[in-house]
Image 1: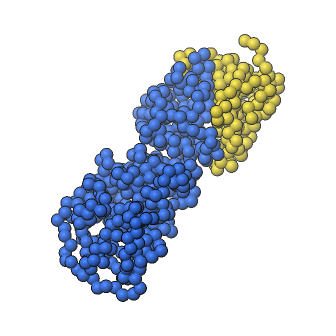
Image 2: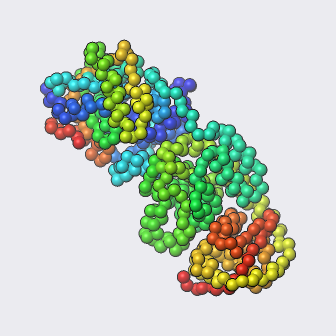
Image 3: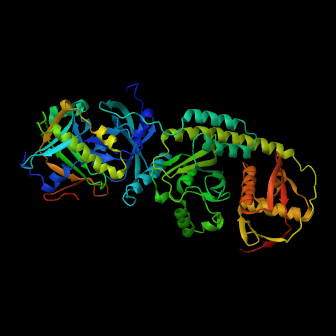
Length: 452
Length: 166
């Protein structure tokens, strides 16, 4: 293979923007040629081609595995011939899911969602790359330079001392350094198989607390498969509203899933990218960005966000470890008794079945965050305390926090943001590592309800 | 070789209507290769199809055709996805006709018009199919087989006489 021509530099040709030709040779020696838009970069030595139907290309490849791809750069019109050799077909797993999502974008872009059904990802080794001579347009430099943006973002994360600072700094970096206007950061709850939004940018509502199950949509598939999922065109079948509705209808999911808090998001994103945030092999979160412009997120941006995500994931994990260790020693500084606020009392209801909490008639949140708030309000009511520690919450079996990796800090951040979104008289504020304060400016009456 | 049917007039019209063109050939070791073409014409008796391409881009394709004459050409209308493949065994490399160079600009303009609804900029299309007149070479063949390749489960179906794959 030519040293100067690396597949890494030719990835735009493999986005499916300009269809490639694939030429194969039959057992009778006759050539066959067809257009494909579903050729995908796997790594510097491999590409994958979608297998949707048993066609002549596939028949030929199974008999004679060497083929030639003629591909075009979507910006410069430069042409390349790849000599490729068929290796295997993958019918599940990360590569299959990446291709399925990408294909869904291409298929709905081409109005062929019902026609394109992925049966497998055919993996080929690239044996040679030839630049085909001819005229080219000058390369287009679009968007921010990614390596400096990555460097600045890594530097910014290194300054962060808390989970909350990491979350906010990450989102700010995506906006400021990567020019990504629409974004969400979702923490993973592995035990429950779902993600919840802790931060978002670019939307009218933050959506803090809204949930997405593993496996649903771009974000859920990225979480389940631990692989970035990137779609270059509007893909209706990956739209969350529709999938959540279908899933909820299919099987009782709505009861367990936080569906009352609406997901933020563009109604019909033209480009989507979800990147799993890992701490080593453990899924910590998923970062999601979207755009109204087609083909807006390329392979290089995906790489940059994966690299930034690795820093974020490890920093979050370290933060949680430190917080858990220090929190173990941290007791509330004082049993401060707050003055009882004046004004009309707000009726707060809690449903034990799903942990949901209502402030007056307004739904607030359910699940662990709901249980935490209920416990804090009850303590406050009973003892007048307003200072609490993470540790005491961790030790409370009623909250149902998992033994390992409880992510309590992230849940408190979510609760804090949800309260900020929904009311101006009740909130929680951090007062130090592993400590926080409950702020109430109106009296409450607490009602434990048995049924929902 | 059996005497092939002339090309259906509707197919002849389709393949000369400034659609996307690629030509494939196979060498004697079984390796297929391909080149993008920049023009197409059909003989008056509808028995011979000729594709035009830049010689500088077609080296492996021309070498294979010189060796065994086996060719496959694919014709694609980008907006409708209508796709047709023609195959022949008597591919022949020929010098271009005097009119062929003059047909380059109309082909580029027509192809650009077809891609305009897909937001492909005209300079891109003109670059993709640009060819210096002195670089032009022709490959002609007698189509023996025609296949409908419009994406879907029926892609790859061989067309019978009178069928146009629409």
